[in-house]
Length: 279
Image (cartoon, rainbow, N blue to C red; front, side, top):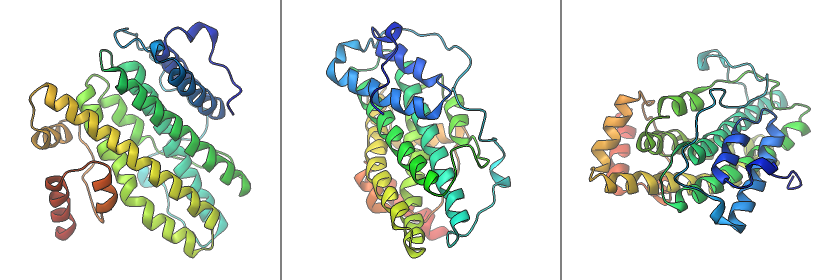
């Protein structure tokens, strides 16, 4: 997986390389190139040029012809007691992780003039999402399927499009809203997989949850950094941005332990507890 080189024309600028990889249509190549870029930048952080302004090529993100993208309401839930149902679930998770690679790469190339650690953080996220995608793809293959075999929806990238002009909104609404929902969803999914005897798939969920706590923590870090830089209250700012960009309404049950580990403060957790009790 680590043998694919970063194209020579992008070696001088890691953010331009991230944009080039974001345009990659082949999922396996995108995952491999993402991991390779992260390793190259860890070895030489000077490759990051925070102040470079890069033009949007207008063909983002690169993705394969399949899966077919449909409205979320048309996707049917299937029982995890059957192999067919678990294959559909694994495919849905792989689609989330593929989109998460794209979202992290997009943060790296799109938002200029952030501290160097911002780009290092999001390259780390991108590489870990690529690892998750590879784990899920390999497990899906054991069920006789590949990424693209089932329809999927485009909700994650739609939020990226809405927030493409505002790094504060991106940090508020992708990692600490959409990805944080994964912290809540992972434990019950894992439990159902284990109950079905699919311990190999359940173990992948353990890896994903562990890493996603760190990803949401990174989102919280940069959201609060940007709020501090603009003298904004993070709580009221989040509420404003969620309304402005039509973020999905938060619904429980919530994984309070994981959310606390991911950097949500006690006021935010109390507000979520109120939502949980109101359902």
